[in-house]
Image 1 (cartoon, rainbow, N blue to C red):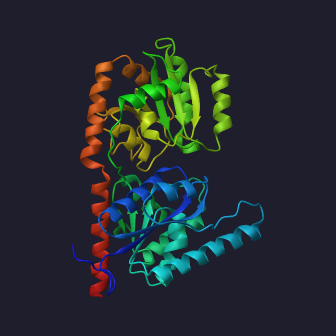
Image 2 (cartoon, one colour; image 1 turned 180 degrees about the vertical axis):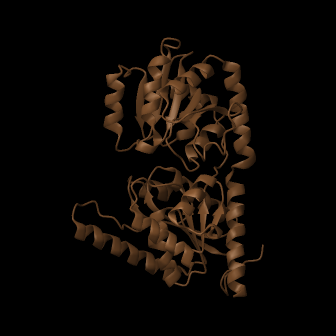
Image 3 (cartoon, helix red, strand yellow; image 1 turned 45 degrees about the vertical axis):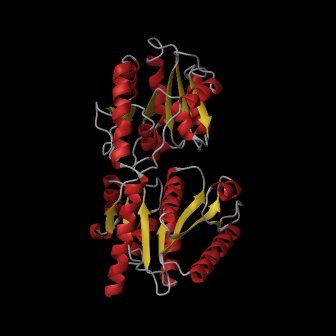
Length: 392
């Protein structure tokens, strides 16, 4: 494909911009895309405004792309220090944009869109793409308006929505529909290994014949983990050998742990914390549960399906776009632990159904939700905007 980059360049140079170095779906999406474009011969750089989880050194060794921590956030209480830290971080980003003269900047969060893409516009970056991965609970209305205004003005030329749900959310926030492009979240295919299943189940203290249900997601309100916990007491009489693992960190840790103890489930439901190698954890599971109140298009769900796990999930837009009820898993009403427990009982009692759903789930992801397909669509979008710029 002929390059439409600036004169004198053989290939496009692309900056992938995120908010924080952390374990999460947005970060995985950013890094997967950066690696894919690098593998195709493009110059790629990944930058984050700050390192939330202390990952900078580890990621520098693990990823074969330039990774930049802008150090824009100072963990102190003072408003002055926080503001000055942000301004210094933005100055570092400005210098990076001016020095590297990127052809494309892709923002992966509302914050990176709002903070980074106007700087890219001022620096003369020809292609500026924002991403909308889902609703952020508690975001002030003025921030939504600022974000939508930047898109509608063309400072952010196109907003990529990760699902139909996130497209609808963006329109509700005020973004004009013609400014939005839907490109579904996707993952790099992987295979689960029997040796990982044996090893991880041993680490978790699981015995042969034990059922292990897994949920992966931040311990926050929108994930609805409390409904999964409420569903388990009704399952135990039929399956006393059940263990539930909830993988993730977040502000609701203590609240969920108190709920587990109040229901006398300490030996049945475990908060696993952050698990760096999630595919290995998925290999140990027998089914995947997602009891969310709402979703965009969750990476954890795609990974679970890729791992061949049948899924029990709430009927929320985004999830329903991927899972066909009764084929890849079972969909249940949201905020309904009774229906959730019924679905768990159905799956645990029917191993052949679990097997067929797991095969169908893995096939669904392999055929339609791979990094190759996603990045090809991003590349088409980049070229379309580049060609439009050339004609103007």
